[in-house]
Length: 102
Image (cartoon, rainbow, N blue to C red):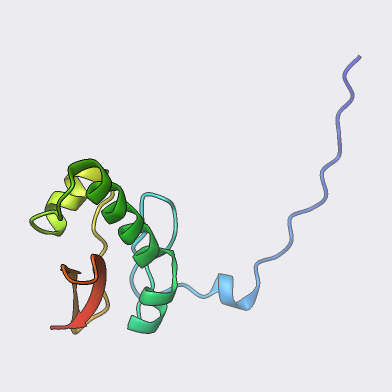
């Protein structure tokens, strides 16, 4: 015999959750929200994921990708839009993706 379980009521949204942003947040394929400031962008999973994919590319192809578009095509991860006034570049010397001023 199957019994029905009574689920607890859902908690009401907090003030932070109930306020709608002006524009929808950009999300990565991993489901993470793309940060909007350079500091957040560098410290969160976004840059770490890009650099992880870059290291995989380097290991497999024994070279740097020509640009971020090639890295995106190879990894299947779309390149997120960096915070306003900045751009993403591949630093050949450091072999890393970095956020730099435009």
